[in-house]
Image (cartoon, rainbow, N blue to C red; front, side, top):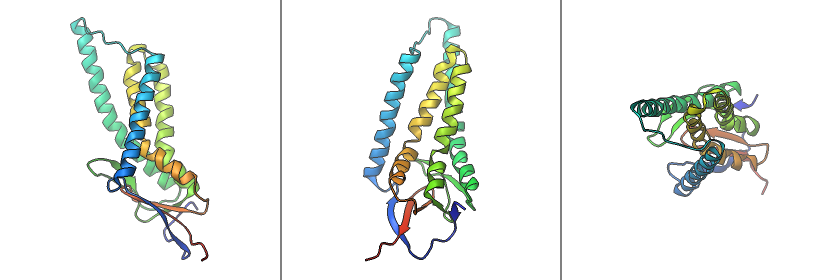
Length: 196
């Protein structure tokens, strides 16, 4: 079982993170997101140069349609991103997943579950992996003039997962014995108490 609902007696908090309260961590995560966005834009421009052809009314209508598709799809993607976290939590034994929006971040979390390191890393990276593969396949199969519509969603997927990447990096460097409680708003990592 990868999730438990009560910590063993010999566990204590060893790391706490709250992106809304800890400004330094929020700046690091947002800096990572901006860096990823810039890098991915450059890669996209190399793969398929970005061109705006708005010479005719038809070109302008096609541009507006693509902007609407990107906007609506990205809102749907944010919901599906959090739902993917929730499905992964359930898969690894989570009892009750809660979803919400704080004004800055959408989230999926659980106040009742503690996930082991193996499960938590997979839960944190599930949307990045699943949607990364889906958007990659779509980018391969859509007509060339729709490349940037899908690629903007992929950029949102990867840069939007900056928080997931950041916490995964932190947790991956910690012992296998840990448990993580992630409410979606904050996360606490617990590990065995060390003998004095």
